[in-house]
Image 1: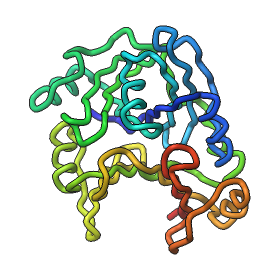
Image 2: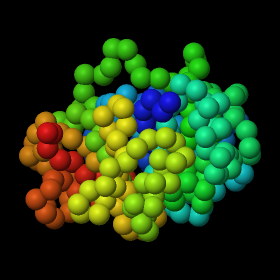
Image 3: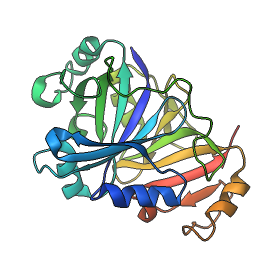
Length: 256
């Protein structure tokens, strides 16, 4: 069973630069590790609420998945990770219609038992299946009091992915990972997860594009961000920060 959307993986050309840019929008990562990826990686994470986090990664091994993504696509959101309570069963389901990277579960990985489905076999972006082990990163107990020291955001609401056909992507995602989708009147498809956030398929350039947050006070967030980063014109749906600022789009909307 898929338990939750556990994290969103990124690819950056410099961890220090990524951390600095994320700090400008109130999302500075912590828990820096310098011993991952066989010594070719610096990474950290930003807790986003919902028992979910952003994994901030700079990997410079040319053979690594993340490094290849960076070279081909530039900085941005590279994959989503779905936590499962039975990785053997989850992988068996995927392999009915798609291959798993290297045809194996990576049991020696630092953050759990992992398996990857690549973009051409999934929905236009990489999906990681992960089952944590006792020493892997997990959600802290107690959880942090705030998501951001700067903003009033309370939780990650959505991850937005561009796809050629949202309905087709939704059906493919459900077939692979056994997570049902909902069709919306505007043409988007929403895949809700058990931890209160969702994946949104929207017609557009393929790939993971935007993180959407819910805030207790978007007006206060707009004032806090004014002068720190350029904001897109307000279209009545909330705050929009262009992808050029941190490497991916950010939207902030009111809670409820």
